[in-house]
Image (cartoon, rainbow, N blue to C red; front, side, top):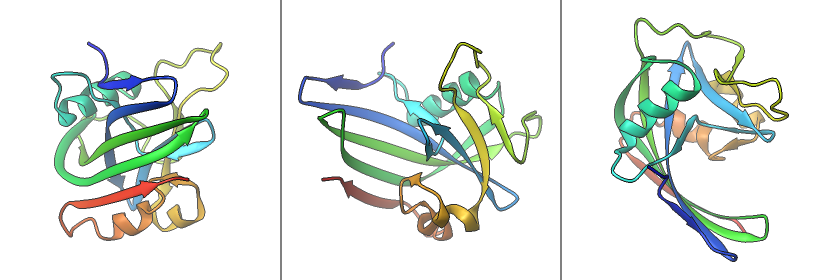
Length: 161
């Protein structure tokens, strides 16, 4: 199966799912190309966003480390990258660590499929929630949204350029 996305020479679209995993007042973020983001990935045709998160976390971090909880954020993101205009819809779910999860619970760790020939690997970081305002993270309003995580589903739109 392929991700639900398309691209032409002028524009592109993608459908993504991301997970909000909080532990000891820290949130798990991934860094790739010098930018922080919530871990997740492209939704494949026929897959729910919860199924996407289970698959992506299994591929990137480890088998059976998460349970997908309730929907929290819906982000419509319009941006420009490599001279193309993109539209992305990203669905964020709150996640819970499984009791048998065997991942580091502080600091940083590398993508489980890391290959030494990879010049730009994906790293995962446990970032204190109170430090989110001091780093560049997508979505940019993540700190505010995390402080309002109990207020139901939040919908927000970002337009670049």
